[in-house]
Image 1 (tube, helix red, strand yellow):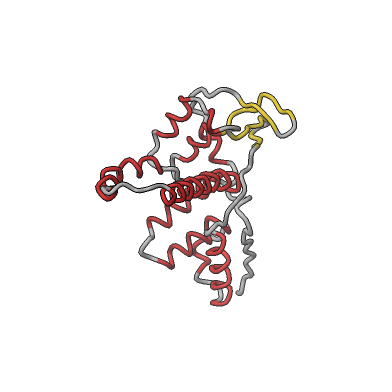
Image 2 (image 1 turned 90 degrees about the vertical axis):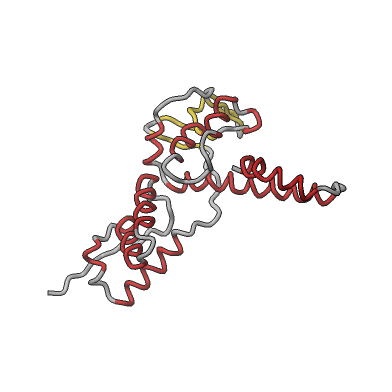
Length: 208
């Protein structure tokens, strides 16, 4: 007997949580040498389609779903979400990174890179803290105190996570462009090659 299957394809990351995203990334890595298995993993995690039903899809439906999901998993620039409500508590993004406390800066710097991986929820737990005061576009958040409540960020929409991640990506691009512009305007020393070789490791750490 022929059975109809209704598959809902997400058009944005709004309904996908960090928890679900990390589960997807884990499966994509486990099946890195099997494109068909990776596609089945996307169908399962993003559309809720049981892997046993993938082979029952028509070729047209399979290819249509696959192309839509491939477009989704390559997120474009997402704007920063400054405020997030979690269980009735409003959290605000660090309003001024230049005045971030040393403790917050040190804890973020302890991670090797800024990537959306298993440590990302801990980064978000540092950057977002409960709002204490709002006045127009200005706001204050609680002073940073290390805590173990980072798991709450696992159930927050990827729209929020990608917004914070792209914020750092764009910040890095602006920084690198400023450095390149500055170096073009200054007179370079004759031993610039050896200086750059010695500084390579420092630059890599600073970029992270």
